[in-house]
Image (cartoon, rainbow, N blue to C red; front, side, top):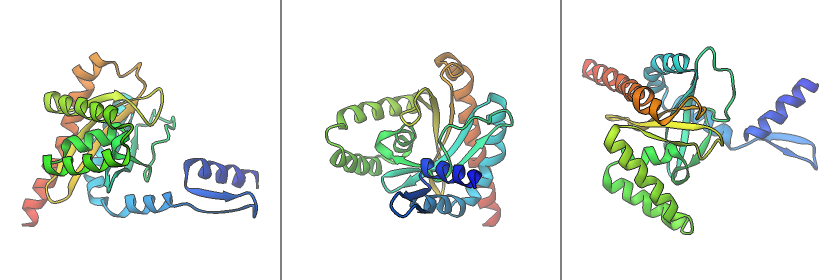
Length: 220
């Protein structure tokens, strides 16, 4: 019973269960729908990314994430960890964050066509007018970084004490995704990101693009 109780408390903390103190009962939370969405909507894309992402996570002892957009949210589709990386970081498949308030969201916005990006930015500005100047400045930084070197590096707005490196992944006919890695800032210095981690993540994002083009051409 104690094991079940601990598991239920963990699921509540992660947002997958709700607990009623009055009835002392548990029920599924809306976040569970995100898990189903992540499991079924883009399973072929997850398959294209998986091998390279697991290799990258294992080589650098980090977590690699695959995410996409759902309206004004960013949804994590999958979470890849190397064998040595057993630490949890709270970023799981089905987790979602406001697109205008996370590094993943800035990278996704930076990868969109100008008109679509402008439309979403207008919506974000209306929803969060008091925070918009700071959010706009952070988005501008992401745009400059991705335009200049192909990737965006920042401290995570979601997990304190974590650094996040991300790249847009645009697959023709399937939409825009974000490939990211999360790790300790001590192991993700700006010099190392610029010299090694960033270029390798860009190369990793190019692998599913090539595979997707090949599969699309073969099917045609």
